[in-house]
Every structure is written in C-alpha cells, then in structure tokens.
Amino acid sequence: TSDAHRSQLYRSPAARHPDMMSSGDDGPIDIPFLFHDLEPIPQDDGPTPVCSINYSFGFKEAMNYFRAVLVANERSERALKLTTVCLKHNPANYTTWHFRRECLAALSNPAGSSDGKPKFSPEAVEKDLRLASDMGGSNPKNYQIWYHRRALLEPTLLASSNHSSSSSSS
Image (cartoon, rainbow, N blue to C red):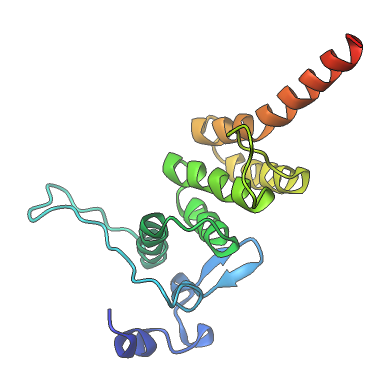
C-alpha cells in the first residue's frame, strides 16, 4: 500500500468506520498511524484458497501489521499494544500470546537476562493477568490464556522458591 493510498484510506481516526479503529489497553489506536514505518504483510492463502474466511477489517488490519512486526523482530511498547488488539480479535492465538511474553520480557528487562530465562516486572505480570482474566471470561477453557498465565507466573514462583530454599539452608 502506497503512502498516498494509505493516507486516503486512513484520513483520521474520527473519519474511520468503527470496525477500522482497533482498541488497545488505553482505548482505540490507529494502527496504520502507529506503525507508519512498517508495510503490513497480508495473509497469504496461496493462489487457490480452498475456503476463504471472511475476517473483519479490524482483524485483517491488526494481523497484517502483526506479521510485519514479527518479521521486523520488534519488541517494543507499540508491539505490545498491537498484541492486545490482535488478542481482542482472537484470544486463542498462541503465536500472539507467545510474542506478547517476548515483548513483556524485553520491556521488563531491556539489558537482557543473564541466565536466558524470561523475567517480567511485577507490574507487567499484574497487568497481563488482568488482561488474560478479561479475555478468558467468555471462554474459561482457553488453553492459550491459561498457558500465558502460567508462563508469566512461573519465573516469579521459581525465583521466590529458590530464594526461600537458599535462605532456609543458611
């Protein structure tokens, strides 16, 4: 999509159809504006798709930019916001939850973990547990959400377990 075409399509958030505005943690976000430096990557179903799925515009837009963020290997605050939008469209997307944890780890520990294990800030864990709870409310059997919760809490619980066992042995 050229810049001229994009600017006509996305004149301003107020001029967009409600489905064209994606909602993040902090309210609606204009994805093309936020990711102006990335070219969205459309889903490639091959030359002759067997069964095309009629995704909403908001879902297609969010996922097209999500693919671009994955290719760019970007772990940033804006990438984290995009995962929120994608998960609101499809809370059962394991890849999005996994990438979200990678963003959280990168933002919680910018210098990188010395032991190679993800570390999440307590604030990030608390906020994401709330998000997972909000998204899992309508589908309590969503395995991807349960796994995300576990993956967020496991490093914290293991660290506190190791800390308490080392202090009791002293």
